[in-house]
Amino acid sequence: MAKLRGEGSVKRLGARYGRKVRARLAQVEIERKKKSKCPYCAYAKVKRIASGIYVCNKCKSKFTGQAYSVAKEKARLETSRTQKQMYADMEEAKSQEEEEPEEEDEQQ
Image 1 (cartoon, rainbow, N blue to C red):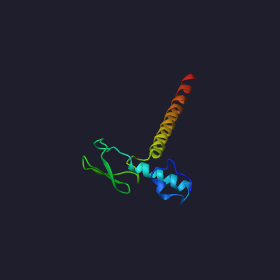
Image 2: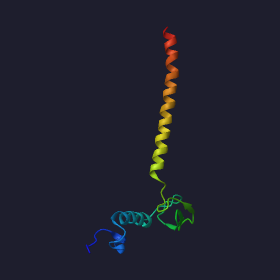
Image 3: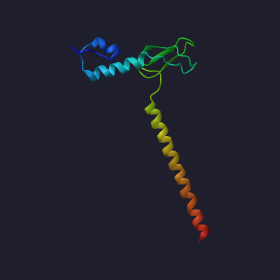
Image 4: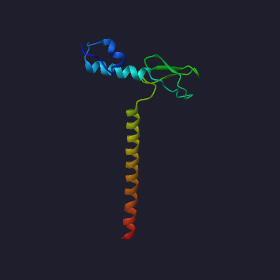
């Protein structure tokens, strides 16, 4: 069997399950076990008690997050930010269109 390097905790699986599955599992385990900050007191004392449920050992607050991390999904935040910008641009364009006909009437 080939020597397993840099696989971390998934070395225990050996040659089973395939490379991609082991790589995904490794990323999930790294994300789940890393230290996370509490969104209320900003201390890195958050512990995962169930899938998506976390508790801060300092301020004793219980809150939800993603299944394997405390942080909310970045893609969702980026999408909402992009949508807000798009709507703001549309509103700005409408207001400019409304101002232009008034200027044309004054010139005639």
